[in-house]
Amino acid sequence: MNSLLIALIRALRRHRWLRLLGCAFILSSLGNGLTQVVVFGQLLRWHASPSTLTLAYLLAMLPGFLGSIWGERLCRRIPPVRVLILSEMLGLLALIFPLYGLLSHDIPALLAVQSAEALFTGMSYPALTLLFKRGLGNEELPAATAMETLIFASQVLLGTGAGILLFDILSPISLLALDGISFAASASLLLGTSAVFNRLYHNAPLPMTPESPAKWRNFSRLQKRSVLLLPALAAVGSPAMALLPALAQQIRPDETTGLALPLLFARSLGQLCGPLLLSAEKLQSYASGNRRLLFCLMLFLAGYFLLPHFSAWTAGALLLIFVAHLSSNIVFALGTYGILRHFPGEDVAGASAMAWRGQIIVTTIVTSIAGLLAQNMGAVHALYTVSLFTLAGVAILFWRYQV
Image (cartoon, rainbow, N blue to C red; front, top):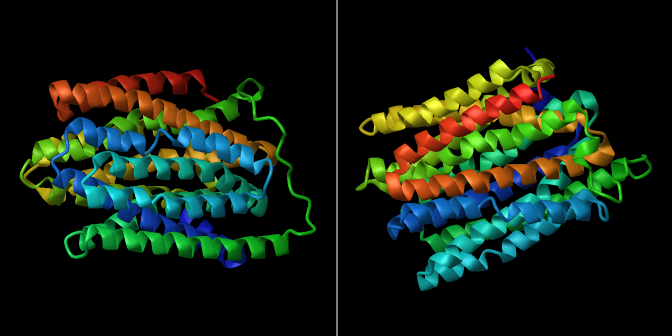
């Protein structure tokens, strides 16, 4: 079976610019993960309330709405690699927020860096998708799907993994210094990516991005379904992920940090492994089948629903979260592939930005509801209530846009 991992390895051997791009984003994701450990670790040390922990997750998503609009417009004016370089440089400047927060014991400053990173991630997403569409052929799009999975999973897999090991060894300021180095190194590698890409495609006709954004009413049924997969995943997955630190806080009040950070690591390990096991030739059939998608989402929720019952068994809790995100990120990979495969080059940046914004809107709504319910009924009951409701809504949505 030709898995996404095999497809990615083949594409990396063929394209030097893709190797440079992958290294750049893995470095950047490493730094972002370290920052996330600093933010959540300090909030837990300062005994922040469940609503503050949920707000931290929300702020790590919501500004991406504006970022995707900004990124989509920039892609119509400048090459996508330059947009990526700009996002890295702005991310480096944003580290002033957590630095101030640590020095002055200021929670809003810690939350501000979550907003800044969300803004710049939203800005880079349509540019990254457009770059893949321009530089890879249709037969190589599964490799792009694998690369996006690797990039976004490595933020917590590498960053949180390193952060967990270093959190009690190095000071938070030292971790932020490592983050800054990663941003600078990533920007340097992206400059190399730009040079190689421009040399290869200097005389080749590239798809032009339209002057106006893509319109939902002009999309086919298949294109609409592709755009909706990521918001559907957000509807089911966001409440659980937002409540994960609060769940750890409720399950083990005296060992919250010791449980929450390993759970974040297990989460990202599952996010990485799930999509890479998919067959590259069967991505289209996987994406069009409702039963398989709903099974993945139900398996995800089962892992989180069972988590409180494994509070005394750390290894079991980690395995549950790993399997949950193994399943959920299969849906993420299929949504990413659908946008790359079913939209032409001139519309792919707009479609990916639209999916990103839909994901953020849904996340904002369901996470806000989950946070409010967690304050009144506890994180566990809030998780059950919101997740079951959103799963039913997603099932109806999949049926409505069945192809």
